[in-house]
Amino acid sequence: MKRPILLHPDPRLKKVCAPVPDLSDELRRLADDMLETMYNAPGIGLAAPQVGMMDRLIVLDCVKEEGETPRPLIMFNPEVVAASDEMNTYEEGCLSIPDQYADVTRPREVDVTWIDRDGNAQRETFDGLWATCVQHEIDHLNGKLFIDYLGPMKRQMITRKMVKLKRDRARG
Ligand code: K1U
Ligand code: ZN
Image (cartoon, rainbow, N blue to C red; front, side):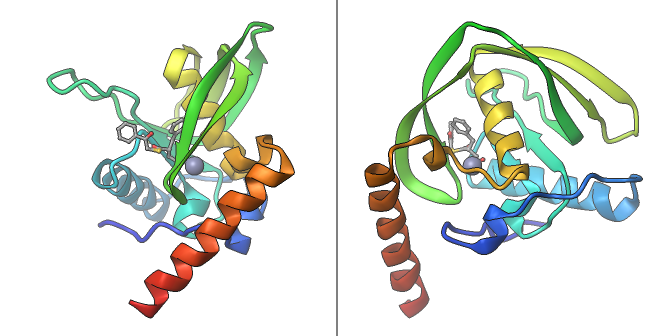
């Protein structure tokens, strides 16, 4: 089932999410719903707070080429446990901040640990777009948005545009 995606500014997007103590059918259903919501958007990642759930859960699939095999990843309690000194700049977007893009610089390579859908511990090194995306999604779990990396003027300009977009959408 698709779920509505919250738009910035929203206090739920600024909160730190709670670790998931134990997997349950309800949490697995939430993860499956988030993947469906992400593919439908379309996007390459989604974090639980973007659908109003305050659990440390993200989903991602950075396989963008049509015809390539998709690689949906579900990560409970993801953690960056190592990061490269080398940095990479990527023009990021966010499904909670539609049509706004900005360059963000982050470590080029990260080692991430997480619990998968079956409850197994996983660890993997990510680079390129996967590294950018997983860091962007983990930031969401800590109440941080990509615009928080920008200067105050640019961030304020984007926030004002989003307030207007939300007002226009509410008026219908
Ligand atoms: O977290 C989100 O809001 C999802 C976001 C993830 C992201 C994008 C770019 C850099 C870092 C993280 C998106 O998926 S925005 C949409 C997007 O990037 C995209 C959509 C369709 C095809 C390819 C990319
Ligand atoms: Zn985002």
